[in-house]
Image (cartoon, rainbow, N blue to C red; front, side, top):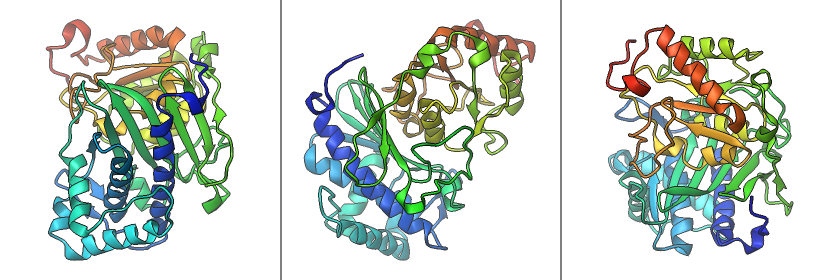
Length: 374
């Protein structure tokens, strides 16, 4: 692992741009949390989106573009719904004006049309293996956010198709959180609480308070390096709150691995799950999609996976393949996830295969062309 001081690292300027931007995004999200009406609408895929999603995506894009005008962007939302909803666009614009008064390094769009244009840079963007590309998820866990529960704001920087920087804000998670954390976990410090995790490829994962206080970030130990036995595995997953995975398979894998207190940390959002793994609140997650045609969305994982990897974790898909971050807006070349400490990742993967084979769920390794029987 590199011992270069953060202030001397080539990505220092990118990190210094991302942190105040994500702090402002967190403040904006809290403004929306205080409102009964969060401006929630349903997208074409029936997933929810709020005024916070639109405003944060515009805020992060504007702030980064002001410093790095050649960088590209990929994000979850497009501005289609805003352009046809005058009331919604006014609410989003109003939130940006409030946060923009904070000044500092924060940049807000110049007009409502500029705001929509910035959002569409993300909503129509796709990563490749050539350019610096920022991957943004303005609210990861929108369903829980609407309920006032755990959510995250995700920023990741890819260079040559590889995540090199991750910055994640968790406004409801304490910097000193203890396992297990769940969707309804709340930092007792309230608006003075929350944390930011960030990781630099080859340089480690760090955690710091979400607030603007000038506190040195704390390097998270490479806790996964100490795990050499399956008996030390602790789970992070989502149970019964998502219909994309096979809960019974996840439970059987945990039982065969001997994981105690399954499910452990039970979190709907993927970014909070990766953060919990990085913080050592767990060290293992397995996700088998019901359908091999189901593909993960890049903004739910890019960068956030790096948080765990920089603490000694290894992440592949269910087939044992490395994750292809340059495949597009979805991880089209990968199926599901298997994450565990490096020393035992192969053992965990083998158990996953054994359970899938025993339960008649084909479509992995030599059976890739078979249809998954669900």
